[in-house]
Image (cartoon, rainbow, N blue to C red; front, side, top):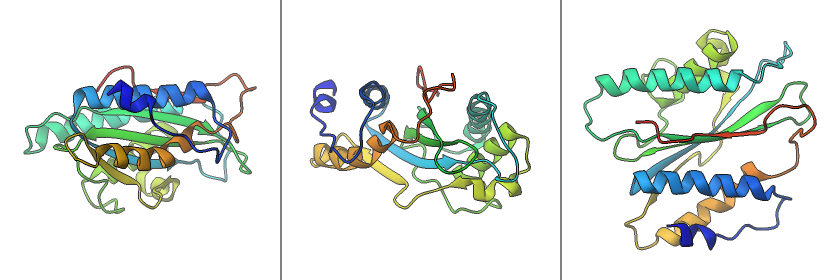
Length: 202
């Protein structure tokens, strides 16, 4: 798997942080050692514009809450396949007075196929993400519905058994490496701009 990751091509669309690119590949390697088929989910976490947020611990609280919600779901679901979840996030700030987070979450496709309808009345991955973000920033779920932004083609499936796997991985990498771009990352405020799972969460 490592030799395939080394051969991935990164286009010169942005100026990239080479260390971040390496970390992104490490998370992919972590996933493919745990799962032959993975579901990749991309989303952004933003703050309400009517307040200023400068708490770097909110992203840790988000993942603590998200993992707790996954445990509840895993206990009650009918499937037997492990979740095998990994993640990576980057912190950025553009024209807003608040920073925001770009997040990629990876899971075993046999356990999770999609993010689900963007509806808080459903018990799905989207509602868990919104609920976890609400918990992290001290808001109620409905206030955070619009703060969890899901881009087009947010979900991608990668299958190591697919004859087109290398092509599909490269196609996906062209979009995934956006997280490693240097632009809009504040490197002078003393806070981390990237975080990732140290091990797979089951």
